[in-house]
Image (tube, rainbow, N blue to C red; front, side, top):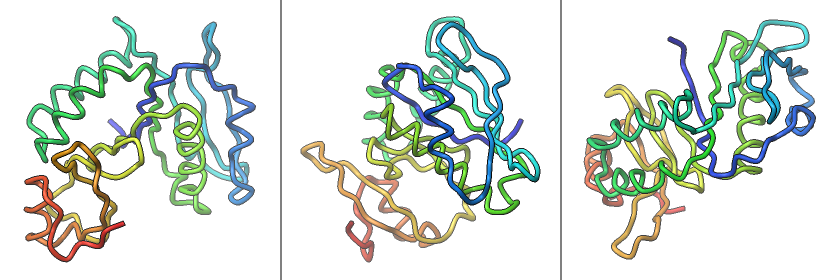
Length: 201
């Protein structure tokens, strides 16, 4: 089982391979290779360095009964039932059923070769900006529609600055940067509060 990041999109209008290729950065030099398609277009793409290893496998999984995308959303709904902050978990329970397609990136060794991460982020941001939705990363959690982290699924060893958001009483996302490794800030976030010392964004 590899490491995945995902765009959980609310618009299932197909994105062409040409549109995605136009989003790739000039550096590193990369290519997209189709590995399967259906009537709506590509199902799986290989993002690879032109002069090196594969960076990621990108899958397009529709959220319809019997398909992988539907199973993924069902699994996420189970996960967030016990997620924290509780306000974010409840928000996600309402949002996830609106997702129509899951773009899943399985990250490969090429991410660490010639800054392959730049290509991954360019492709992810391209899909997200064109089709909307939220972001998810294994071992991290979920974002809101603006890309700010709202649900905690980090390991206990997580540290460093991270852009987060919590819901206020009126249902507005309040954005800030916190230190994931600070126990007081972590506890406040898990309770759905803006941590003392956090930098508002």
